[in-house]
Length: 412
Image (cartoon, rainbow, N blue to C red; front, side, top):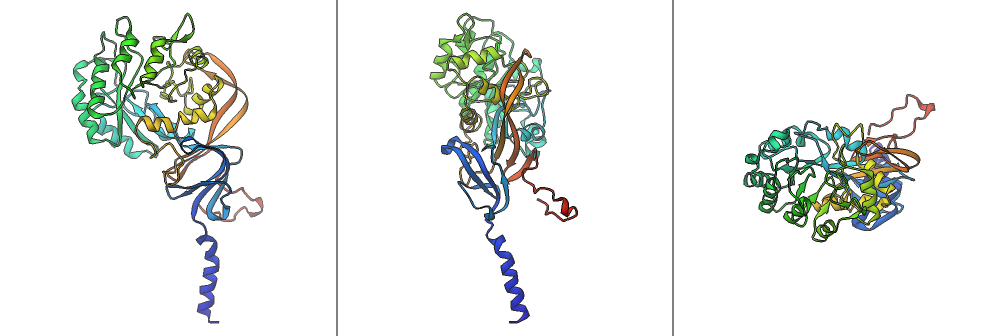
């Protein structure tokens, strides 16, 4: 046998394992929750490039360049936070620092920019984050920059808002109205008109001081099916519950039957334990789970997505239901399903891995009262578009072999 043929055969033999590695990652042995595909049990998830390649039991480990043992953990689609603040608002946070570390791969900035400032938002934030960022654009042209601007009805222009949305139909997913403190329903009516012109949903804040009776009933009458009310479990106007009976108001149930949606929007001032507890007892869970995370809530109520999910689990929601309200449901609300919100084969590889810890844990609500619970959901690993972006405990890396201190380990 010639030297040339020997070298060729040796090269082929050495290459065989590599040629058999059709996946970049396999997340092996985790409990997969993917409501979109009716998966709720132990399975492996394989990733090729930036896509989900396969979800099945017992995918051979030698088919991947890297196998990550996630036995004992929960594996879900990357979470979607419908109410975050990453631009415009004074409390905005950089999403890569605050969301990827919580298993949240998609955020929707909730009203930070208006039609006048959206281009700046795109150029300074959206174009530079690993986190996928969408926008509920503010009906106020200047955006969420303080009460003077947010009460300026002259700057609430549905046509110009809808025109900006038409420029960026993939990035602007709806309209936000917030913090309007004058009498009347002008802000909401103009936001809904922008929604009509753009055929996209409106999300409304609850700090609406109309000065009239039947405020919430009238607001619900103006809203359309598919529109969202955020801060649903606050006590700003206590319209979800009747305080005397501690039951859900009939007109609130009627609004849901008509197709209005109720989002959490926890934040620093908009989530109260007794409201959430009584609503859950009266069979009124949120449609979508979100954080309203900003610099006033990140260190007080600590309202990131796993934190808010943990609170609703304490009030009786199952983990599977909470994940559905944090993945599939919000993706559908903003018309991004099945692009996101699922581990379906061929879909973008946005993946979160969680630990459900048992013990004694303290949680806080807006009035900063403590709730003691015995379960806490914590993110341990996040993959965004096929890239490992967060790994709390080094699950993706080989163990250190003290016998080979200076052995070269391939760079991931």
